[in-house]
Length: 292
Image (cartoon, rainbow, N blue to C red; front, side, top):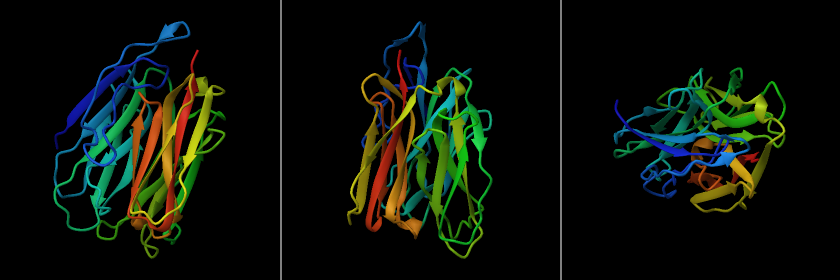
């Protein structure tokens, strides 16, 4: 498998990328730019937002966004160039050494060729990856959480579905950082009579503890077929990570196909969902680092 790798250089502490993530409907991952280095405290810290774009095929696929040499993943996202609601993301998974991020997706029905995009926000530093145990109760909506060793040090939240039948798949519908920025929760749903599981991953940097805050935007529930919410960092703060979740009638989670679009240049995370079971809505989260 081959893909296009896009790298944008910016200069805030663990965030602020100069990639403008293309519109949430079409052309996801189609544009990238380069920004200036910014001075934070006494040091310049170069940050990269990396996009990896898959070939256009009609089949299930994975794509990996690799951090530049020496950098580590601080947060991640995934997107689709298919807004039918019939393609879903089932994994946003950092590599164990945080050198990159793997995003996987699959169609729920026969589809024309579609494209998958992986996003990795990378920086120099010493983040650690913490993985939850798998959770396998026979229910149609599952969530699992994992916490950072140091409270307040959560910079990114990711997750994946494990063990789902390709012919009867499950999908992620939520990646949620808690208010204290200590705990990461992954939410997924799929068939109630199968033993698929969900895992959550927390990316943590103890050096950032006490300097991180969470911004939240929650849109009201409605019957719209497509919905989106964007959470943005306040002035004086730089984007380091984020997440989003569908809420409301998400019990049959394959009624909601969610994607996660980080835009560190704008200091924001956008969650976009398609074909939710009415009524439903989206809650988006931005994890923000206090500059200076």
